[in-house]
Image (cartoon, rainbow, N blue to C red; front, side, top):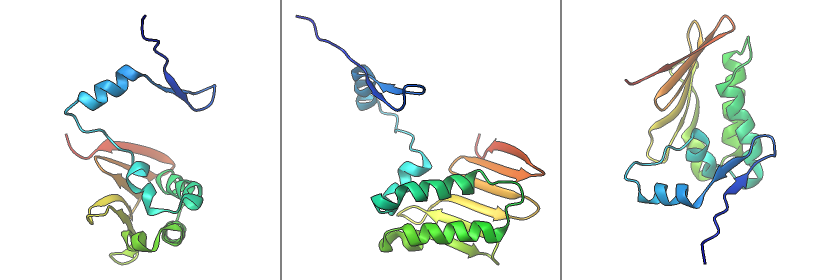
Amino acid sequence: MSEVIMPFYVGSSCFPACISKQKITDILNSDIPLKMSLWDRIKEFFFTTHQAEAQDCLYRICHPSAGTTPDDVRKLFERLKELAHPGYADNIQSHRYGGKSFCIMDKNGDELLSVSFADDYTVTTGTRGAFFADGTTRIYPLHS
């Protein structure tokens, strides 16, 4: 008798994500480490009852609307800090280096996300950076 193989679907019917047994096997047998999103790295910082709001704050930080000010970002970082487990609240820092720099650090103290204001709004996550100026978004790699 042959094995029945069925993929596992997650998401809405419009944009489902699918993973098969073969893909899981390939991941388990691979020596290449998995890439984790920013959210995957910090979601445990937040109570499950606050994760949706924390994700919304992160989205607004990483996709700022035109005219976003340092005070707007400070409020988002402070809200993230309020939503975090007490043991992780210090990993979320606002108003560093004179008030125009913000960051989220991992458990080891390494920066996962940083936001800085100069003439533009710059967001850095891992190996990618983006800056927002004059309503234009530019994304660039940090390492080649």
